Length: 261
Image (cartoon, rainbow, N blue to C red; front, top):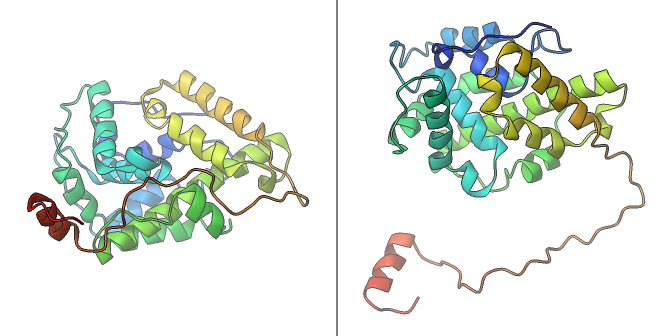
């Protein structure tokens, strides 16, 4: 099994995305979406922003940060958290990190053409499990505000989902079990936990990380649970706040004016 070598030019290569999903040459299904296919999709759509050597938010780095948001929950899914991950990565690579301001990242993310993300996603379609996508990936609530960005966010969720499913397939084949027996959540959490470390690891450590991940996923069996019955209800009570029934800007003015909302 051969692995990539990290370097200062990594933010200019789509190997960045492959490595963070713990994908390595020699693994089953590794050729489903190779780095060359990602590069080809971006080239054919004419994506050429941030091509300078010292550019920060290159297409590979922007896609990497965008997909990282799909793997995390709550505050770790925010653009602030995504920029923080970029800062850690570039600092570790000896590059000048960006500021914590999210403006540059959000502008670069908006330059990722929806057709590119859609093409990459459709290239990887083994199945679709809408419950895993909506619940485990927290897709029931989308963060983007404009229709164009919402569509990008949906396709990014689907792409991340298919990449995780590929990892499950690799683990299942290595352990001789059915992919449906393995936990999607465990696979997602393992990839999210090593998201930045995998990019920075040397070849030997990267191989150990991949093998440990596949072994960990194979150890989390869910199996067939025909008699499992759980109430479709939440135990935690919501915070005692009133519902916001008007635009936030208008409600803010009411608070400043002392008007009860």
